[in-house]
Amino acid sequence: MKINYSILLISLLILLSCNRNSDKYIYKPVIASGWWEITGNPDLGEYSSEKQEPVDFGVWQAADGTWQIWSCIRKTKCGGNTRLFYGWEAKNLTDTMWKPQGIMMEADTTLGEVFGGLQAPHVIKKDDWFYMLYGGWAQICLAKSKDGKNFDRVINEKGTTALFSGPFINTRDAMTIQIKNKYYCYYTGHLMEFKPGEIRAAIFCRTSENLMDWDEPVMVSGGGKFAEMDSWGGGDAECPFVVQIENKYILFRNIEYGRNNLNVQYNSDNPYYFGVNNDSLYMGQLKVAAPEIVKLGDEYFIFSLKESLDGIKAAKLKFEKIKTEL
Image (tube, rainbow, N blue to C red; front, side):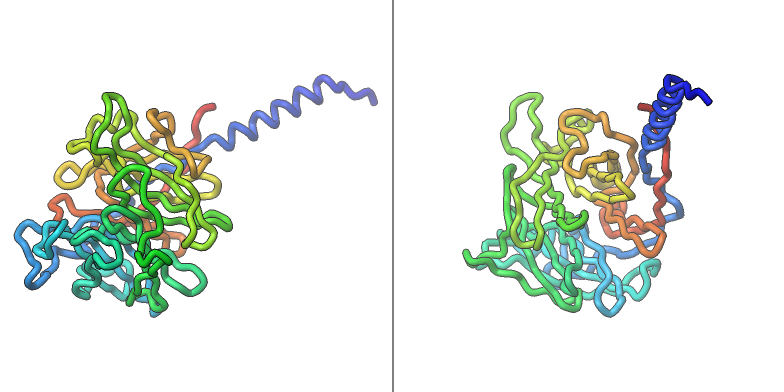
């Protein structure tokens, strides 16, 4: 039997091309249920203010199986930059109106944190310890807990809680994900002074093998068409959250809080890059603010600030697999 190698080669190339085409897809987040209320605006006692607002928050499961939320409450009467952490607890992720736990943490200026400047807690578990990365206004700080409820600050050799800061100012909104044997921390910063066309708010990423020592920052997202919607000069690349599904990485990038809640998403094969000064990886948007995504079993849940900025709400989330062109 005579083999036609030319036809065999063409068939092989077509097969390889089809396989490549089948790998061209994105995962698009879609709200998959109605919303339910998780928290209202807390009673802060002497710190209570008519203007106070729950903003950036973290959601995690403690060692005893309960679910925890700590939110940065801003515009309080605590002094300084007016921010502190308040907590709630629930037995089930789907519970409504979680039980208030009170004020959980205030800034400690003796450890380098700015008075009233706590921002955006996020918790990740490693080796039976819970690590909380949070903003101290000018830097990302660290606290640890064995039970996932009571956190102690980790003080470095300089006598502060700082892990890193910069390259922009007001380093904040840390979110950490483990990818293989490394931890990727995504966070936000902005510039006070900038030239026309220059990126003024961006999301950066640093990596670590132990959550203590961090590599130099890489800008992974910033600028693009949504930068034009920024209302104050540093808010078009806030509250990053990254979800990994197979070999795809979905970045949630926050643009606006409040009545005009807006979060945009980018889909990338590279956890270090979601588009800088371009929107080629943009795939969609949701009317949510400062979202946290929780996976429980095979289900995803999304937590968001309410449009009225007086609490937190939740809904089910799904990721639709959509084929794309080359």
